[in-house]
Length: 293
Image (tube, rainbow, N blue to C red; front, side, top):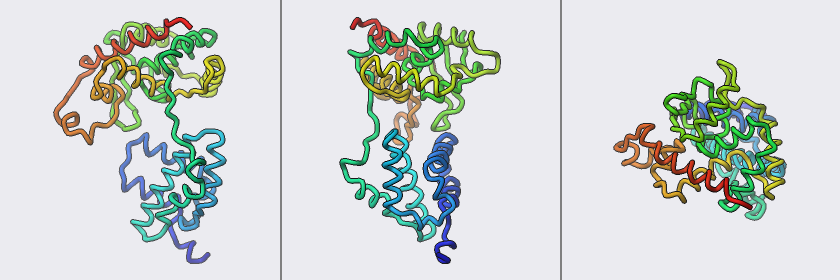
């Protein structure tokens, strides 16, 4: 135990990893959160003390409630243990492979890939009718913009330019500011939300537990569980089916183009170049929402 005590702790490796990788603000915060919430008991221990069986047990406990954070924990520990091995020659670089072997192919939970299908959109939209107006506006705005849940929920009132019909998100997951043009229906929706929001406040600033409860009620009505991020996935799917090309979909969702030389270095689109695509998506979604049961 004396030898292990000299090894860097999980918390120390996390600090070193973040400094070395220079992650964006949101990505760094997410990594800290995953470790702080789901690996808190291990933070002060030497990284060599991590045990595959203990990690597998922790994974099972988290995945029982939700697979996404369980999978994020494995990804985080994989990155940190591999970094520790490369930087210090300590830590188990193959830890997560052993965890996955213990879990078995049938036990490890796949990441969610839920999309609100076209033939369910009408029922989903009608299920919103009994929810508070701000909840309805938030859910519809998420699907109409493709924004991440926290990007929209934490959007300050100043991030909405009603005259121009543009949403400006300063703080994003990849740390790249993002502007989203609004179609006519989305503009009216956000104007209504802005009217209900105090000066200096955030649009859609309702407690997360309120939104989660609404998700559960609507899920019971439509017959399947869904989460807020599924609306972003649905946005991309509807956009593609509506004929919006892949490069534009990536731009609308603020996904990185660093691996695409043409998109990253040559194609320079402004917010108005994106507006026709957003109007196409909005028109398609409203048609789906009006579909009878």
